Image 1: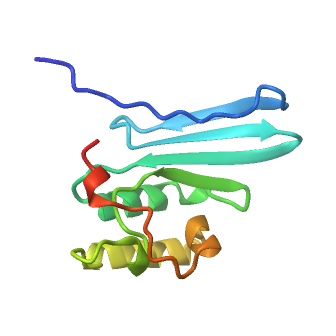
Image 2: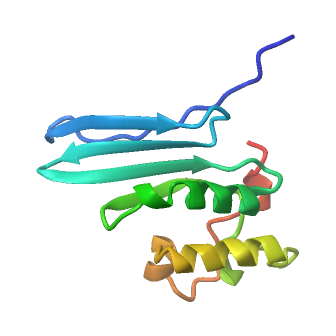
Length: 135
């Protein structure tokens, strides 16, 4: 059997800042990595999620709930979500289904925000595009 293709996640930072990795946690399937770091005298948690192309909203919700204790005021959550996070982030062919609605509700309950939506609350351009899902 051939080894499945894996894509990597890069988290880049300036080499000129005081940056120390404290802990790294990842799941066996490669859907998330949690890195606790000390940057410029601050503890920061970086969570990167890579959801599969199918059942992405359910997967992201499960990961967020699993990592709920890791997420605090100094947490950044990023990644390839493969799902729209608001009605504005979809193409006209897509509908926000029940799983996506549940994910959006979980994001709201965890008091997380989509930074792009905060900066561009009415932009019809969307960060999510189904054409990019299989790349």
